[in-house]
Each structure stands twice: as structure tokens, then as C-alpha cells.
Amino acid sequence: MAVILWSVFGYLLGAIPFAYILGKLFSRVDIRKVGDGNPGGTNVWKSGGWKIGLPAIVLEIFKGYLPVTLARHFGISGWPLVPICLAPILGHATMPFLHFRGGKAIGATGGVWVGILGVWAFSVYTATVVLLALIKENAWAAVFGVSLFLAWAIFLDGSPWMIVFGILNLLTIIVSHRHDLVSPPHFRPWLTRLFVRRSE
Image (cartoon, rainbow, N blue to C red; front, side):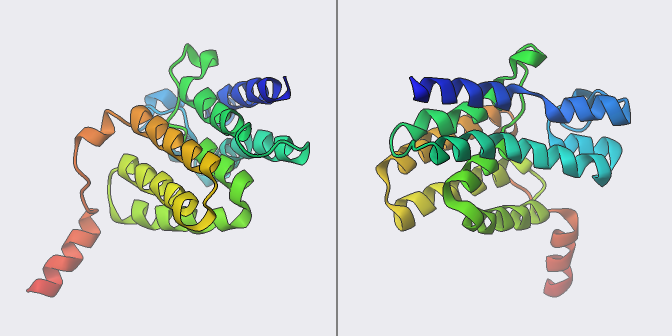
């Protein structure tokens, strides 16, 4: 029963469109009409700058982090954590409060893994941010980041439940980014120019 309650809590928290709300309140902008149309923190940053974008991103991470951390604090561990960890990610990806036109669940995913791994999860975040700086397609960076978390679970942690969650998490990210993954990744123009100059 506790697992169901924590999963429902995680889903509902994940479904709250914090980025959309902050965009409306402070930028007076529907962020679904900005950038790639994703109701996430990145488009809040684009529409209103870092003063609004940063809190939006923190809130998106928080809604993945909180239910997992609380559930673990109250004694839930192992396999029961799989649905609890997946719930806020699915909540963000579906967002019933926005007529089921959800976001890409990158922030919620990161928050869940911080809840599982602690501060070590930020090393994967750093690698993902570096990749974001190098390639134009956020979708490929997101898949790369979740793949790193999955690799961590397989090679460093070894917990079967975490590996299964990592696989489900990766599949969720692939589905939520499926339209953007059609195109292969491309280096950003500044990096391409750098390689061209060095080859001359």
C-alpha cells in the first residue's frame, strides 16, 4: 500500500508544470510556444532569462528528488523503489494538467537519480552538460545522460532493481524525445569551425 501511495504522490508531483506556471507568472509567456515547445525549464530560461529559468530547472529536479528521498527515508528500498522512481518521470512526461502534453522529463530524471545516488549523480549531470555544449540536439544529450546513469547501475552499483529502473527510464526518455532523435547529432557551429581552422 505504501508503494502505491508514494508512486501516486510522485506521479502527481511530477505532473505539476512548474516551468509552465513560472513562465506564465513572470514572463507572461506560454513556454509551449517557445523554442521546441517543451513545457520545461530550458524554454523558461529562453523566454525569461536565468532568474526565472534557474528556479524552474531546480523545481523540475526537486519533483523527481523529493518522492524518492522521502520514500527511502521512510524505509522503502529495493524493488519497491522502481515504480516510485519512475512515477515522477512519467508524471512530467504526460502532464495531465496540460491535457497530457507533457515535457521531456530530463529534470525529473536527474532529480530521481540524485535521490538514488546522492551527490555522485552530479558527475553524470556535468558530462551531460558538456555534451549539450558540444552538440545541437538536446535529445541525444538526454539519452547519453540516462545511459550514463544506467551504466553506473550496471558496472558500479550492481543492484538489479536499479538496472531495471535505468532501462525503463532510458526507454521513457527515448519515447519522449522520439521526434528529435530522428535526426543524427550535429556539432555546434563554433566547434565545427574550430576543427576546420586546425585542419587548415
